[in-house]
Amino acid sequence: MANFQKGKVDIVAVAKAAKVSPSTVSRTFNHPDLVNPATRKKINKAVQRLGYIRNRAAQTMHGKRSGTIGLVVPTINHAIFSEVIQAFSDSIDQAGFSLLLASHGYDLDREYAMVRKFLEHRVDGVALVGLEHSDATNRLITQQKIPALAIWNYSEESPLPCVGADNHLAGRLAAEHLLDLGHRDIGLIFPETQGNDRAQHRLSAVHDALGEQGVSVPDEHETQAPYSVSQAKQAALALLTTPKRPTALLCGNDVIAQGALFAAQKLGLSVPDDLSIIGIGDFKGSADVEPGLTTIRIPAENIGALAGEKFTDFITSDDPKHFSIRCDLECVARQTTRSLAT
Image 1 (cartoon, rainbow, N blue to C red):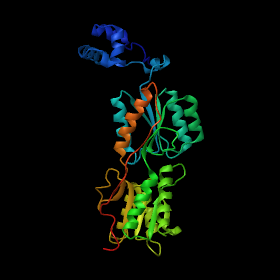
Image 2: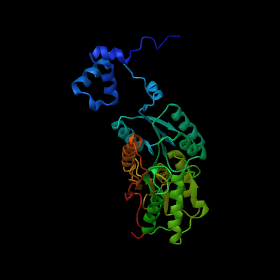
Image 3: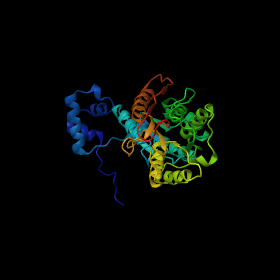
Image 4: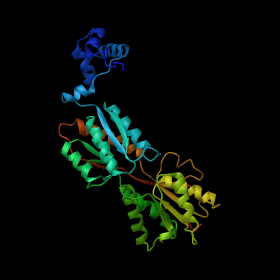
């Protein structure tokens, strides 16, 4: 087996090539603002020419930061979290941190395993999607005293610092939009709520808002679908072929709403003339489907950028303060919903 470690360039070789001291090279990496720009440029050229890579593991052994933040998301298969991941990555990069990314597939036990792996790699902090996590994960974060962040969801009662949206409000806004348009026969297609507090909070708020107007949803008009356009389409086909078809579908996210739109088109239904459809999220592409999808906009990019900024400040602060930041939601009315009075 080849010895890949043999002959690797060290900081002394870089210093010699750049004609500076090893401490100046170290300072260029750790505190570049303290090094003359011309000297930094000379060192960076030497680094590129020699192929030098600094040893982060050795740094963490001596109590220095690893310069990495772990982010665990439920899925990377769909657009649901892509915008928030990218914005979070860009934001922490500006603060000198790199992103380690993992997904748990809506399995909170697997989320615990991912957090453990990140801690083994000595990340400087972990960011988790949502407010619901296993007891093992919460205990691990407390035991290790690792900076942790809840992203995507907002709650004043969150034990972790959080940046996100109020998902109760998202569900209520979607329900109120359909109610304001005169709909009373409303079907619901939501993801499984177990281990998914986003879907759980939205769905409970929808039932509350409908109930306040005396509207109930019969069992045959409420179903589940995973984050899959094709499976959401099949769920919607079954719901829309019941004896008394609803006049509107409220979907737990835009992925499901797009599947419902395709189901309606397959059945020859005109959207919104025969059926109104609303989603939650306003992901990339939601405005571009035909007709454009009415939805509740969750400002994913803003959430990711703000979360990255606040979390890196939290990690590097000598006196970090708990914070909870709620980002505004907006009902974006496009062409998949209409008033029953028109």
